[in-house]
Amino acid sequence: MTDLAAAGVAQVEAHLARLRAGDDEHPPLAVSSTARAASAVRGLHRFALREGLAGGDPGRDVRPPAPPRRLPRALPVDAVVRLLAAAGPAGDAEPRTLRDRALLEFLYGTGARVSEAVGAAVDDLDLDAGTVLLRGKGGKTRLVPVGGYAADAVRAWLVRGRPALLAAGRGTHALFVNARGGPLTRQGAWGVLRAAADRAGLPVDGPDAVSPHTLRHSYATHLLDGGADVRVVQELLGHASVTTTQVYTLVTVDRLREVYATAHPRAVR
Image 1 (cartoon, rainbow, N blue to C red):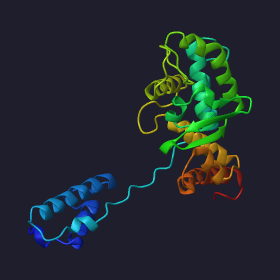
Image 2 (tube, helix red, strand yellow):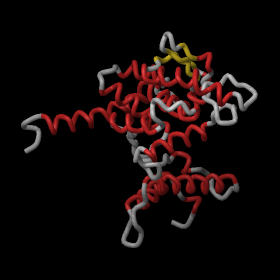
Image 3 (cartoon, rainbow, N blue to C red):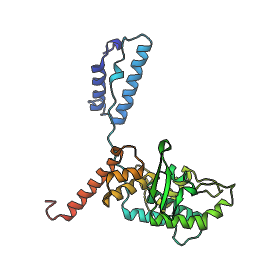
Image 4 (tube, rainbow, N blue to C red):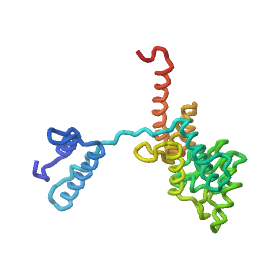
């Protein structure tokens, strides 16, 4: 079809379907590429309508293909332990080592987003009660437990590490500070994690690279593996909808299949 004004929804959908299927001369397009093509088609028809070249906009009613849901990648427990140990020996009193260990223990021990961790203030902590107040998306706050290992690491950082780094700056209420005494940034936290992951022999590049969100994924998955209710995990993660949290149950089902396949005498023929 060469007449843009004559194109309808059926023609637009057929065009996108051909892109997805491919032909003898063109390989099939991936979902992401097809979505970009759909955006271009909609833009063309909006332009045609605006310029009076067509009487309608058929592209408006055509939805791009939904990308496949990527399951969150969680590290095995032993890999998390290796990563935390790689932040620095538990007995090392060097201030930055104490901070790095405390930061990674905090991320895994609370399930905090990296923005929540670097945005936490000292006054948000109640180590006697074992809790911290996290400020999440949309200004929402939630009170979450701080695990024993994380509490010990944070306490060591507050007593023996933070005052030394804080002396280089002008003072801040931030829980985690950088070498200049100012609040640790997201980029700084990423650097801490990347260095520890590299030392632990975990991937730092590519699609499986370890990120702060990897620890959040691992936190949720390990809780569910341990028998936690999905709605409890929803509250701990600060998800507005349980639907968001339920993606982690797909991860644990895969884990259950693996255990079943290796443990049950008649699971595999």
